[in-house]
Image 1 (cartoon, rainbow, N blue to C red):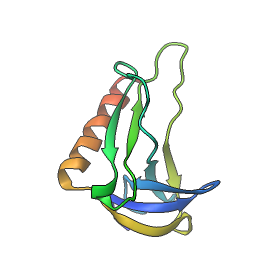
Image 2: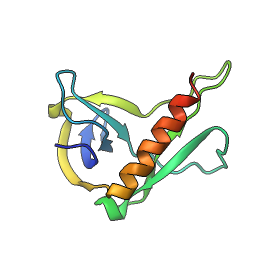
Image 3: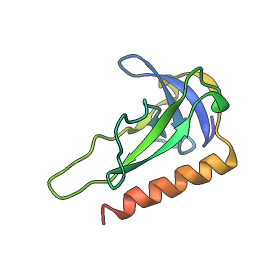
Image 4: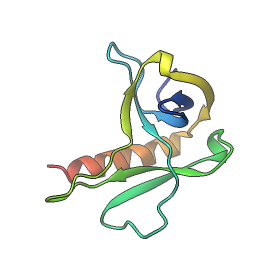
Length: 112
């Protein structure tokens, strides 16, 4: 289980996640793959496409939302234990992992 791998995880239901860290005592940092926004989210966040090329049977996104004054966006970033991860689906490419890192940095900069 390594950074950049795509796994199925058990939350309230089975959902795909991308591991954003290796395992440490607190678990794995991961982000849930969600459906793409059906409206333009420019200025509100960034979406990075994840799907069939990464081992899933559908196309989705990792959504990185920017917080704003009086607005706390929903987050799909979570910490999971090894037991939460049920089946490896695949992995993102090095280029996709770089795109994810850029989106993480951009969303964190907005919080400062």
